[in-house]
Image 1: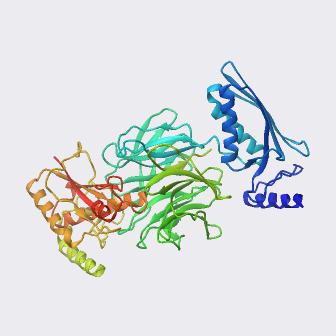
Image 2 (image 1 turned 45 degrees about the vertical axis):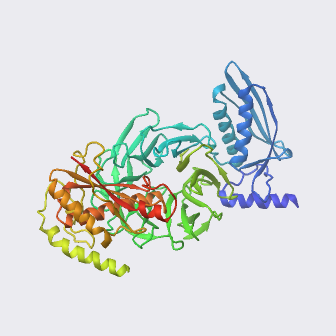
Image 3 (image 1 turned 60 degrees about the vertical axis):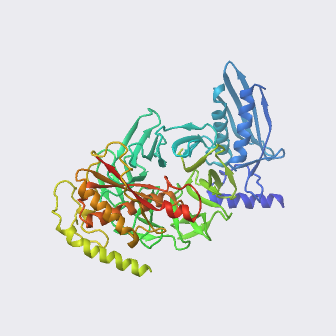
Length: 405
Length: 175
């Protein structure tokens, strides 16, 4: 009976993720309620050095946080590793196998500087996810966001790891920053800063640290988002007298107007994975709603028909759009699938859920949770609907965007 | 009530239009969109609605102690209410007397609604005030806009009276 249930769950998971095990691979036993794969980590042994202990702690936390696995001593997937710490190096020999069939999923040694124990744990977690499920893990990805720490009037751009640790301040503009987004290769951040006293758009190169103003037109230069080619962007400008969407070519500096609505504003553009379409917010109907149009502008199609406001769309890697919809006075997260024209509710709790952004795995979403005017970034697993708090710092943290792989 | 406001803004527009269309059309400064001659309901021709091409003359933080009073807006609205029109006439008179200064109209919102939407709403508030001032005769290339959305509340509290105070258009003077 248990076997039948397990097979069923594997089929369901396969249907959702297209992650059915390769032919001949041993079936994975998962718990039907959570869709998680039970994994035993009792074989995680080795050095008692602080770095080795940190490695273990971070790996076990990742297994829980990213929801592919559930740590269980009797799990069908057995993870064993010898952690060796010496001479400032950390070496982890990993073996992952199926308990019943002894089939090996992974047999590989990972190594790095002892000071990089956290990164090494994320790397091992992602390798584990890949070996057992065939999907890529996101523990080694990063998140960019706005933080108002301490001095509430300065809102700076910060980066952190996908587990919320490793906080790094990216800007020191001592002014308002808005809407950070990743470049398609994960090596650039575009955002809007008031450092010139006006809302101009800048790109920060994360490798060189160099910053360049890419749009400093009179009026708004906000909400900039990359096309997948990395050379073209779409953003809101108001230089022609009204907030509309424009395409901007970074090489030629040329702008092309995409919308032309005189008594409405177009904001929050997000580009489809193939780069051919743009979803955005417009209040032509009187309230902000979400529309889709061709990348060159033209006719638009409204996709949100429920909720008094629908804002902050993010077009995910698998083609689904996540957005924030105002229902019964609260912002809730919803999914829209352009292929089926159907929407799906993701959250229900009576707090505000805003600014969702897809992780590159198309499964997790980071978002701003606001309760009693306090904002923190959370991560939602769209399968189990479990939310985990990401930021545990004083102040306000919001407008998070998840990096690509 | 809403109809009344619309009527008022139509009346204001009727007053503005002769002034707007009477402005000499400047060529070369403003790019070349295909249909610059389109008339719209809320601003006149594109070359008037268009913001000045350069912000170079706006150096420093600007002056806020000029005695001009901020205008207020209704919830989720960028319409210039009848009660605020007198304040804009005072601004027009100030601009006439101080013929060399430039003006930044700064749009602000209350904290309700999404930040991105509010950033655009603040800009539309600033643009509406700008269009009104242009209608009263202030030269379009002397008025810039800046939206802070909900980022700089004048009252940090979370209640109706704070929200009302925060939905505003401020005037910043640059010499």
